[in-house]
Image (cartoon, rainbow, N blue to C red):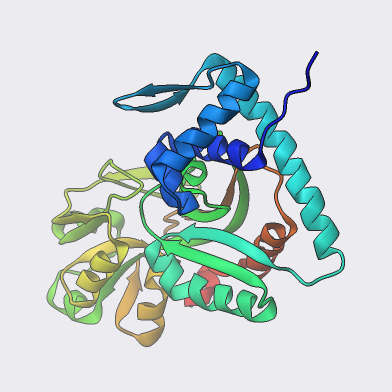
Length: 306
């Protein structure tokens, strides 16, 4: 039987089309033309005597044979890449590209200096950082690692806890002076409430007190998926809000806002590092994961605001 021959460039073109679902996006990722990507995939299919992709007006999808081939070939090529990288890195400092994404507020206030320090330690790293509050498709967008806040439901991701951020109820001193006192969570019903709906669509504030769990149904005067906008509103004396400590910490430390109902447990936000599942993780990415984990261990405990 004649041995099948193929070009690695053709194989990588197929991988990227499979991951992005688009010849156009694959061409953009490769910084080449759509026709070249199409020609490479067609050449690979011809060498295998098998159609790997369905091409439709709505997008490009893997055939059954394409799915099987992608899973096996991707793993094999990843192993070759890691083997080559390990050989190179065994005699050299960390180097190579890392595509990284994280949420805007957490990225601006906390990740930026840590990522800059990492690059300072390893100048051979080519770090491509994109901050967004959208839940991006890591595989499709070509990201190696991401930071996400909140509960994760995607089983296709490899997750490692970065840290936890406690939650607190905050308001400005000016707001608290002109409004009725807040002594219990029920008192919040008479106040102007602000609600972050980026991860929680229900208007519920959950808390624990004396070993029991409670849910407070609220009618927010303002909702947003922008934590920074809501924090600005709290600073301006607009209302009261449950905030992750990492969002409110700077304003608390500066005295712009005050924590109320501190004797109640308002829960925590999980902050996680995630990687696409099924990939062999290069040493440079593993090193960044370890570096971030070390930097953020116990970073946002309740004690940091007292």
